[in-house]
Length: 382
Image 1 (cartoon, rainbow, N blue to C red):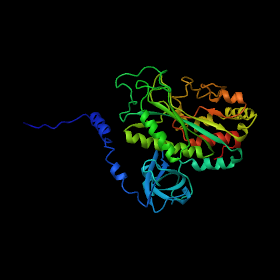
Image 2 (cartoon, one colour):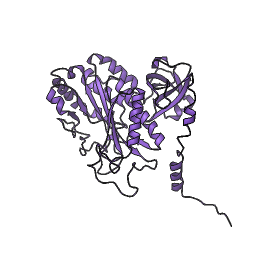
Image 3 (cartoon, helix red, strand yellow):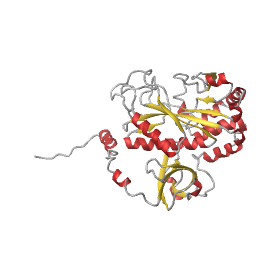
Image 4 (cartoon, rainbow, N blue to C red):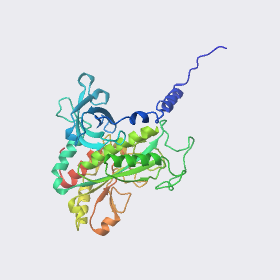
């Protein structure tokens, strides 16, 4: 018998790599994780990379359990590999800011959200907006701003195909998937439940979750939280989602319009209130805030999605419960408006407003500070 070399098309090779590169038996690692709990503590440092959307992480060992982020040492990494520095001067520095429990290693091990500063340890990386957000929240602290996010996302196979969708063609039209139940309506619930429990273990202020309009799309809610806490919790909840989905061999997409055509996009709606809005007669403060927001619509659009807001152009079309990207609007109970006043808020005469413009891949540090700068500080100097 003569053996012949077989040359596979590059597309097939790539498909094989995607299907099998992560095909590990997850049960194997359990015997190692079940070893006697070490005296040392593993801490996972988390930060935002040069895209402003991607998350990176690496771990280090500490001799004792930290009580707060202030107990953790400053660390560094190679910024030339994350799109944040040149190879000739690549050191970037991680400043620990928000500490959480680690739902993967469990025990006394931790996750920590970090600020990224450049080599001089003075200037933030261009994609790091936490410092400017914290500055705005400190200035607005007497107003006690509360934020809550509605994070929509989509499960995607490693080949780019939405989870559960037929390989040829499309599932049935929207209408039966939102908050759905049943194998023909819901795809990926196990991942959602695992993420939910992991967030609770970590100390994330996760308020709930539900299936969304497009099959394989879901939402979880973070908050309400005071000031910068909402953004810290959302970023770490995103990290946990990516990490949980990794165990299932599935990709999480925050693309504002993951599937072209007659399908809903994915948003990052932000609910917002100040102390005055939450008090009796606060509806007047809500309406005043909406008026201020109406005068800075395009500035907010540029801050509410990557690429100066351009990532939102495919989503904010005025259809599928979205507002127009170019025109500001508001309304009571209106999910097609830029700003919605929930009907029960209007009836109570106090509460909060919902800004429906942020995209799923928004940076919450930018969203929250934009809202505070417009409605409380009336100052756009970061």
